[in-house]
Image 1 (cartoon, rainbow, N blue to C red):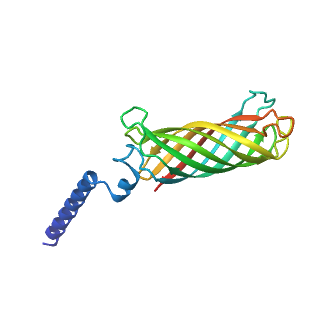
Image 2: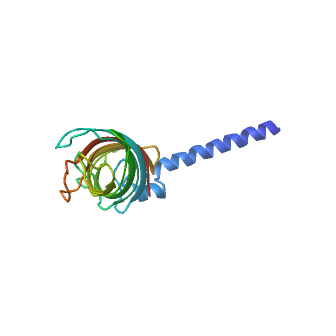
Image 3: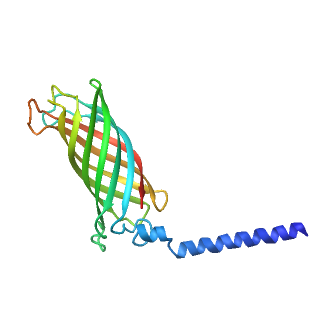
Length: 211
């Protein structure tokens, strides 16, 4: 008798789970309604926020006047705000514009050890693909401090430019794994000479939370 009752209870429990799961598939959760237009990958809702962090490293290139290869490693934290509805909703490039502010820091490990820190605002365009894979392109320009100095830089204060592209893979409705590529450039806009600048191709991984 006890075994029969236990079996019935297990069947009822499994049935309830199945029903609730089915309802969850048919009716987006409140969180999903807040974040997405119509499910994961359909495009963000205007006013969405995100916080994220990344770590990465890159190899220097001698271009645009740079005389040495500056290999760097870095870590960052960022905060973002989606400030548009879905743009070009009927086009392949539909997506949202996002404003991010990023604080980053790290060190040069080749050709010699040095530090750098920076604060950079970014404009990012997130492509709405209709899937968990959402690529983006971005551009940032900000201020930095470093002791890399000669022969390519002079002085502690530097500007930084960072064009880049990346990909968010959503492992849940609100959490994404991030991989990205950025071109990181330091220079002082000829405030002091020499000002050859540094150029490093950065490869970064991280995680982002959306709310």
